[in-house]
Length: 69
Image (cartoon, rainbow, N blue to C red):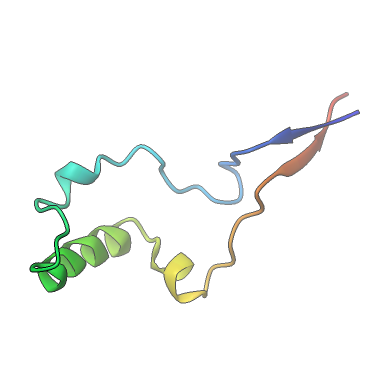
């Protein structure tokens, strides 16, 4: 029997509990894109997630098949 699991910490050990407000001090608007982008990219790079943006790290599967013993 197999089940679907939506999160795997073994293959992609990236945190999903980052509080965005701790890293990005401004909300995106049509007037502040460059400042917002600088803060967002800093966050993405600090969490080693930029590979998901530029494609160097493949997208994780949406489900992972596991077998129960």
